[in-house]
Length: 366
Image (spheres, rainbow, N blue to C red):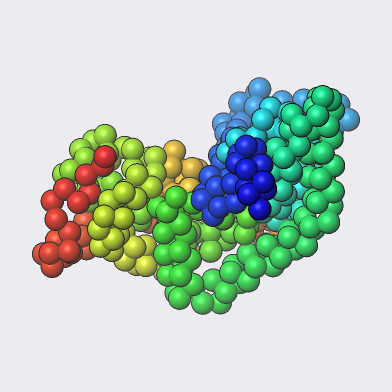
């Protein structure tokens, strides 16, 4: 056993929830962001604003736009990002491109989740054999590719089916019970956004679109804008921007010190979620990853807008159609994303201050 532990330590193979559930998942979301999400944004901008080079077709037999090519590479981008998070050596890292492509292709709607599992397995196996032979240039890529693609062939289809079915259950339940599910989805996805895990990856894995996606957007915005505004006295404009357009995850050290600082944003998400689903019928029909982005780079809002004018394939499959947003739709998006969190969260936090649960300095960013 000591020899095994020594070998794993030498190969930097660490079996831990942090490495796989936080580091790998977070990196996967970044890979997905830089491929599928950016591709979707480029396609939408090109189409809506008639930008020639963004709408031009590249290729003859299978034409793609720039955004289309970017989106097409989401599987390899996710797998390589995961390998990077696992500190895989170069030959392993580069071999994961084919593994990610196979997972995304075979996993269908659950492709991102399949990539997460399979890329971890392939990367760790590749690390285990890396530099163990004199023909490492052959052995490491072959082992990584064969194990990765072989595993994808076996487990990616059922993972995709299960993830798609679970996401569909959430979306259908939200349609049937928009009030209760609006609260549940908004709170859980919002909490996931602030935790050191990836709400974007979770939403993408589950394919959350429609009303459930709208509730997820509401929860994420409640956390980001809520923390940004209610901590303004401690963190000023820098904190407002870094949390409001960056991530509320910056508050995690303060949450660990005093969990009660999390009450206001979480209660706010429980309020704005059902308002989004029941009153404004806010739907996210852009790329599912946008559902878990909140106001980060305004990706949540861009995703809603994209879903209005050019719904994603996932949303189209669920019955979404392109539409011309009304003033009521825009008002709902602005209220849910910015105004309500900026008003409700500080008010609720003020009650927490009066109760002695939150004190000056508790929200100061390190």
